[in-house]
Length: 225
Image (cartoon, rainbow, N blue to C red):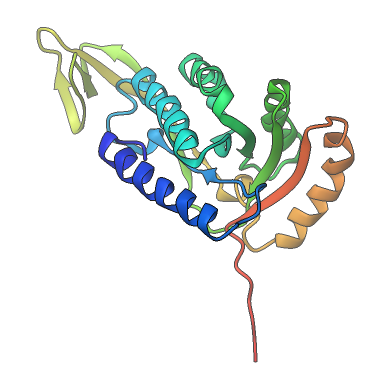
């Protein structure tokens, strides 16, 4: 759904689903939930504005195919990006509910991640992760005459060894790297802790009338016998 071809196929499928819903008398309140992740595309970092504009277009097109506003899964940091915040505003009329992917395990960080989303007047669910996740790596680069990251008007390239700057390009050298412990992101293996955090935060979050509860993403129910 984050690419034009993917969106075209998704619109066709959702239009078909809408027709099925009408034919079979499905409940009127049935809601469609979308998880569109433009930041997973290879070219997103080079042009995030384009990626988020595409997100807004996709949400609007899919809501129109569905016949009404939809729920959208959103990364908690989306509104920290001006382009991401603009996309939320652009698609507002097509959105009924936000599912905020507040993938942190510290209650204070979960609260910080969720709070900005209540101001839009839409229903908000807060999702935490319980599945296995890989470490998050954050790299900081500084512009230099030699470096491993090269940018130009059309591409971004990362090299195993430092490269010299060339005309019309910019080269950046790695300055620092931070690796985030997966235990800061997911409750994997400590699901009881997730329930404890939910009990701790729910009274606070219920202060917003549009809070609709918690979601556990990545939960794997073990069945024996």
